[in-house]
Length: 395
Image (tube, rainbow, N blue to C red; front, side, top):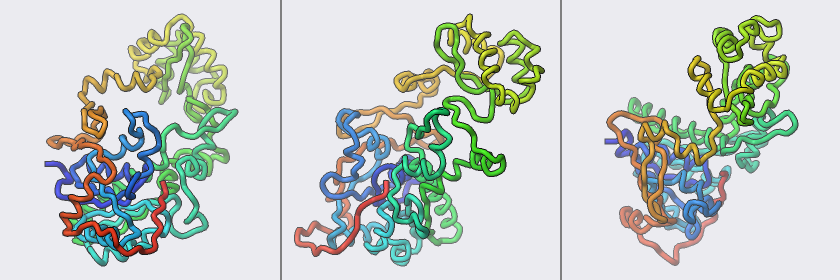
């Protein structure tokens, strides 16, 4: 038995944030019914063709779901969604701001229909305020949250290389659903959840935000180094490759000076005797570290650091990560099905003893439409009356 067996989720979802949240629920055993546009479906299906012809984002986010293609311009489409929601435990949507309400699928309407429903809305900036209707792509939210201003090198800011604002919102939607289900188990009442990408990412910005508000200046852009801890980051070795290391306290710093740098006196050098001074004198510190590592390859340096108990890593590319010995040793990879054949993915990081992640197939667009409509006692009507709606989404 999986933790969410018997839970049904209906999701009007697209792009990243909402699909990320619902895939976590599907992995735990929930039945996730993904409502897509007829035809091409979720536009994330067309982002690229890198996974044997399928889009890498879509493959990542949509296993273990049922796909139902419904035209929300028709009475049939809206009736089907309402019928699904009347029987569901959770409804998730990341349509354009106000679109769910214009369709009659807002929290007030659907919770009146189903008082036990957990209704989740994911948006870029949240309802109310001057940014409510502003388009919210991941890069743009990274900018608005200040993340890009502290990421990159001193010469040039950079975005984070993954869709971190979407992922943050998806994770808070996921944990919010679990929280609401626990609450419902005590009260019998559903809940209304609002998650914005800006506020989700803002929570993750806690360290630099506090640093800037109370320290007078934001952490400097420092590439792969740490803006407030030293030594922490990459150092070039004798073979021209880099080893990454991190010192977290003065005890480690003293050990590092004695056993790696061969200079116990540097632990009490006025330039380096505490962390804030090491940050201020980073150029001198880097010179001392790289001088000591000049006679070793990066792998040899990593071995020495490991031997003396200093945190370290070598820089892996993604192909190397896919073959990581730790993941192999812990048996973290599984095969699952898709329209293009078997694919490989990591099992979810939170492992529950006695539960097996679902890891079901990726659906084609509309693959389950007929079966789900039949389950509801509905049938396609080509002459269904058109009703006004807005089915454009916020990624």
